[in-house]
Amino acid sequence: MSQHSADPAPNTALATVATHRDWWRDAVIYQVYPRSFADSNGDGMGDLEGVRSRLPYLRDLGVDAVWLSPFYASPQADAGYDVADYRAVDPMFGNLLDADALIRDAHGLGLRIIVDLVPNHSSDQHEWFKRALAEGPGSPLRDRYHFRPGKGENGELPPNDWESIFGGPAWTRVPDGEWYLHLFAPEQPDFNWEHPAVGDEFRSILRFWLDMGVDGFRVDVAHGLVKAAGLPDLGTHDQLKLLGNDVMPFFDQDGVHDIYRQWRTILDEYSPELSEQGGPHERIFVAEAWTPTVERTANYVRPDELHQAFNFQYLATDWDAGQLRAVIDRTLDAMRPVGAPATWVLSNHDVTRHATRFANEPGLGTQIRTAGDRELGLRRARAATLLMLALPGSAYVYQGEELGLPDVVDLPDEVRQDPAYFRGEGQDGFRDGCRVPIPWTRTGPSYGFGSGGSWLPQPASWGDLSVEAQQGVPGSTLELYRTALSVRREQHGLGAGDSVEWLRAPGGVLAFRRGHVVCVANTGGEAVVVPSYGRVLVASGEVTEADGETKVPADTTVWWTTG
Ligand code: GLC
Image (cartoon, protein in one colour):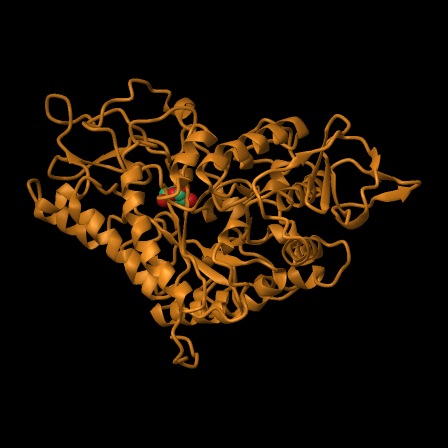
């Protein structure tokens, strides 16, 4: 147990934060991957106390909220996205007192805390699943999951043709002959959301964490909870091609929206009361919903459903002015009618970091195994971030991107932990590369991540990318993020609104006005000359000005203030 002094004040106070009710509409939300952020006890694994000790860094960085990937009791078959007890902290991350201390400290620093909620599946070590297995066929506990007899003469074939997102069949047979559904790893059985006990349990879990003082939830696999009636075959062995392009019998079914309407009423119960007390403080949901189109994503953020949804269409877009402009326009057009803010994201714990994606040729998708041209990748990543932070709505930053970290593409096979890697066959399974613990100091064991090692080995170059190496260094990626975030938040309210005014620009260049700020992003391979729109606020590379014109180098973004 960690040491911290008990604070008698209710755990809902936000000391210094700007307390507008709609804080989340333009918030910059920083994703902490607890295993890899900071390790307080030297066991090589990050923990909640480590996160708490680094909160001042996040405050100084200038973000509004912190989203923590799961830290609940879990056998870690999928790095904590396999939850055995939704109301307990896994001992490797600490305990509930540590969670309480973290939430309180964050609030004291004006940071909000968003926790991950994993409602599509539990761990196979969850009490319900263990009992369901032990009690055998006919157990009422089996109805809370999807247990079925198999097909074929002796039930030796899976009940349908669905495949796991991590590769292989989506069904596993248990010793008594029945099969159960798992859209992810076999250790992650899918809940049956038709069963009332499942809904009751999750509404209670929501209240548990709201009572702990959290400011919101990131809903894992928000598009997966409801399956098509009868669990119909997909009818193809080419599931991978359909994923992300079509509505699947197990993803993006219309029925999921009823669940979110119910959840919204719970969150709203917790929000108005607080605002009446003088601390306007809306709690939020953000959906991880991979849907075929941004228009379908908008369904999740209708006024009586969730608040935000990740914009994976944006994340998957190449560094290309035409494609970027199209996805920006389409996103804003899709979100406007439902009144939800657009969101923007470039990296997270499931995809190759954008510094590495942009170091490689375009069109390779979001799982890349080659380092590419690192210098080019970093230049583009910095420019892409500055573009993202000028757009209206909310933006997500994944830990370490503010240091310009690339993916670690050469991890030895024996250290890999991504379950998809082990299920192989056409799947990528290389998500460990973006999960390597982040460097805080130039030297020392695990570069300041902790006093011991780190659960994934860090490259020797990590010291030069550390916080210590970049702090206060003009032009460093860390200082670029700090400047951009402070300009965005304090000076110009850049995230507000729901539209951009496009300006004429040369080919390969995006130029737009947002109030008193003009943003120009040059995605092309050559420098361009554009009008000097005012005073340069921040630029991702060296720009030169002469005679009312500014030369913007290749792969560079600039912000000017005009007023
Ligand atoms: C989400 C998570 C991912 C996890 C999966 C299964 O996509 O982001 O990390 O493996 O859900 O829970």
